[in-house]
Amino acid sequence: EIDVWITKDDVVVINHNSTIPIDPKKQTIQNVNYADIQDVKLSNGEPLPTLQQFLTQMKEEPNMKLVLEIKSHSGAENNNRVVDKCIEMVKAEGLVDRVIWIAFSYDNCKRIAAALPTSMVQYLNGDKAPAQCYADGIMGIDYSSGKLTDAHIEEAHKLGMAVNVWTINDAATMLKYISKGVDFITTNDPDVCKDLLKKQYVTEN
Image 1 (cartoon, rainbow, N blue to C red):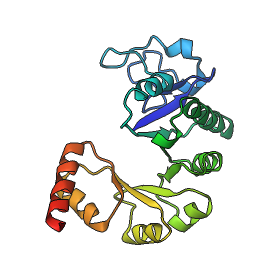
Image 2 (image 1 turned 30 degrees about the vertical axis):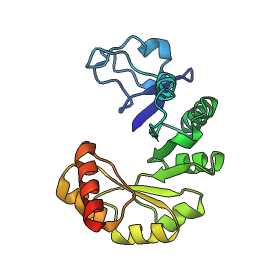
Image 3 (image 1 turned 30 degrees about the horizontal axis):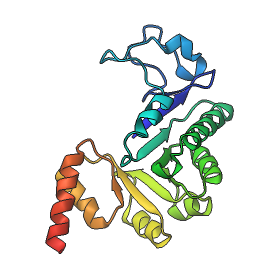
Image 4 (image 1 turned 60 degrees about the horizontal axis):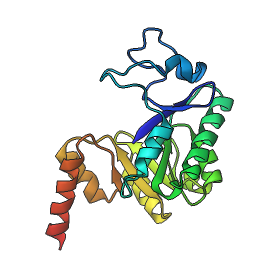
């Protein structure tokens, strides 16, 4: 899972925040050109990665799927720019069937779903009923554990939608959501989750 922002000159970069944490100038990515930030190093000493670099590398890993979060930019113009550019890039690399799209912006989710009706798009903010998302072509919900309810899970699955819950890092809570039948669990400890799923499968079979 990666988070992306777009610069003024339409370069999509990977970063969680709207600014780069150790950038001494505290530049807001969407307000500057790529040349202004390309030499800023991350805390591990590496340069700020671009989405293009990631997609190129991803093509070398055929079993990898990408969860691509479009961060919420300021203003509809910037949001439309980043959505459209990411779609263009994913299409150009032939990776449409390997990308799951997520966003806190409902408008961004709707725009992606309209452009890529066969792709999995999941809304993050937790304030919409699954039926509303479904009506707008959004085929998944990706809600925090504090917002996801049993009713959400039941309604989404009746509609054939995917359900993701985030961010779950302890085994007991993972087991709880596995038993509830969620389709995805976002975690910082995927190995723990994989082991639990294996044990669950063995127990049931």
